[in-house]
Length: 119
Image (cartoon, rainbow, N blue to C red):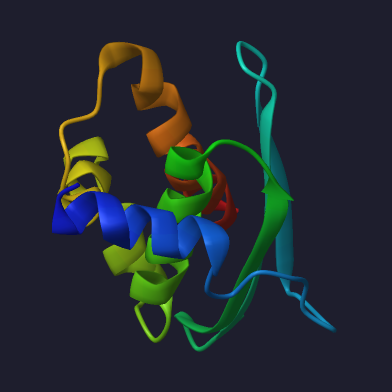
């Protein structure tokens, strides 16, 4: 098993920022109907920056690890900076080659975050 696979499994079993916020300024739920993965993302932003971020939901290891890594990355970042994230940004964070059938899983958290920062 590669170090990247171990990191993904660690984020899956011990997700960072998992849960909900007391008073989110924005909240979004995104669903992948093809596999049933569901991510709810919440954020508190102030002065154009992410102060707090959390996610909850259910899904495969790739989906939840991606959400965990993405929320770690998003803390303290400006909304403008987060708007510039691309699918390649997420694939790079994961550090593994993602098959076409798992790409939607990996990108679901990015879709949720983009909806939040574009509101």
